[in-house]
Image 1 (cartoon, rainbow, N blue to C red):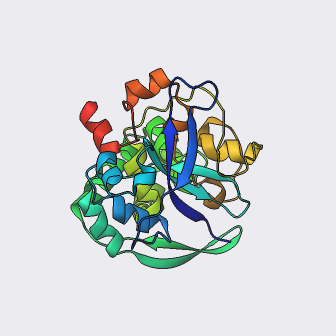
Image 2: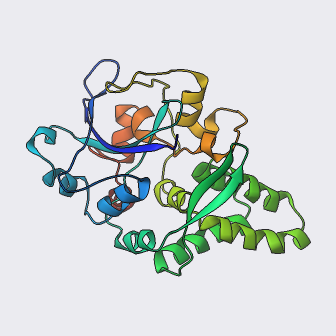
Length: 265
């Protein structure tokens, strides 16, 4: 079974004991269907921020002050991705995505490829290319995940020779066109990689606090060997693990919002 994506809202209570994120609920919007990650991104990228999203929701959701994307995999384990707001060029990119089949250790899987030259994508690649050429492994592993196949390719470049690297940089550029790789850059490039606890709780899905769930939540902060990117598809999930003080310092109260975070840097 493929991954399932839900736009979810929760209530964040910094004064609560234990789990401060509660009352998680799947957001339903009349006339809007979310069948993929791209569907959710296309909807939220056209909104100015979490307040704009909240204004479009039914009254029953108005008590929610945290929004994110919950990803459920074939084992019913789950993790979260950040919402992307206020990025109209991303809508154009999503409209141009093409499906492509690639072979993994679990067999063939379908990825979405962007073959265009939108300025948002070009600027993103130039930034990543600069970090690769500088061999900034700390930043690159923080953005893409130390155990991801994309970072494995990056690491080959970092440890390779000049002859091999001429071809590898072209391969890295092509691989960056995978929408989920590109998306990791958008959501993680400005993040503070601080994790203060390992409490994994949800009020809407039975929690499986096994190693697989913790690995998906923490990404490269735990050493493990993934089968392929299906098992290592994470984005550092600061809102679930930062202490209230760290979270307010990093993002302020409310939703994870990369655009708001950039403005506050």
